[in-house]
Length: 496
Image (cartoon, rainbow, N blue to C red; front, side):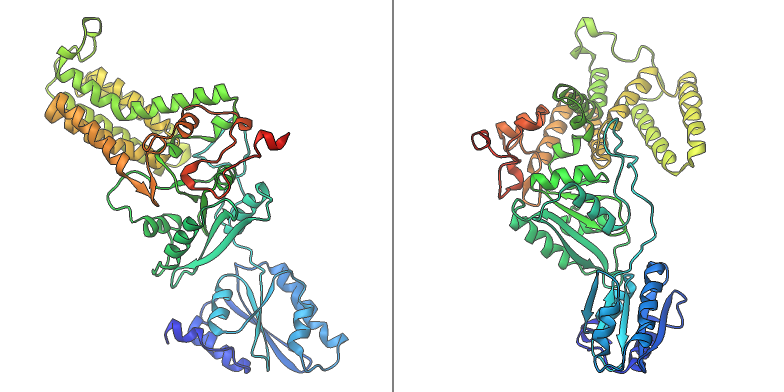
């Protein structure tokens, strides 16, 4: 029986037929967590279906008590469905008319009430998904600021955003993705600010997804929407902070929420969106600008420090006499470029090991790596000390990058640049840097230039990237999102 055919099947008046359908299609009686409660109300059968673990049992018990009391206070009624609907003490009760809707809603955590002789069923939203409470994300910590972050429950995530934007024009469009998983996906945007073309594109792309399920949640959605291919650079931004998501919605971005994921997708984004951090906006404009410049320096260090140092090692004539001390002072049997790659891969091994190491053991692992492996590798002559120094500084620059995805992409760019320098020296550094720049400039995400506002150059946007402006001075929304309303706040003339 195909999915398309099921959608045309109305709910039968016979509860026996509905029960047989649930047994054959959904596994009622086989799956232990799928249940049915049968009641006799005013001499008619009333059944409701549910999935244990996805419902709030206290609500179900209360609804059951109210329905059972109908026998004590009401006379026989020809319209039992309306009577049952009026007695269900819940704010979210809807009519459903097809068997496919019935199955989808039951498996989503709602209870569905069916009444003998009625060709319509009632869905009651008593979902209570298992999960953790909102807490500060580990990857986006701040010294000052809110400590609540997104969790794996899409209802809580949209509520955290709604709490920060109490605007009647805030929209959360609910879509479903996955032939089998039927995962909830929501588009969050301001109706009078967001570009309607962008909203339509995202809605169309998400509705066009045909896949069994999306257990990897938002990452799967990103791959279907953007079709990134082998481009390592992130084309959307992820965040687990509700304040960051709300800020981008107010700017005119569209945020994609996916159930079971504690992170949301911000679109569209540029390269410079990935190097901003919430900490900059929790400090004064001067301190925020200073922190931003330090992050810019860390990003540049993570990409260019090692290739540039290798170039100076391979061509010492480029160094002025005052800097002639730069470079290894001793000869080794292993070429410097090989040492750099081995040390860089070693740091990557440590990063991966830290992810998979239980927290109580991670400190011990770090001590072993830093004290034993590093020092002994230098003592036996595997590495020269300068290699360890510059690889470590480059690694620190990688860790200062706010976006994890961007830091990994920059590392790939650095390794490619190292190969260019190793083979072609000065021309290789120039050519590799130029190719990297051209790649970033020509990249687009949802028809948005990736290197805006640098190219295409926009002075106002560029100044906002370089300097963290005070909120009262940031009157206009970024033009890159094509907002329908350009003003974050009324112009000064209107305020007067």
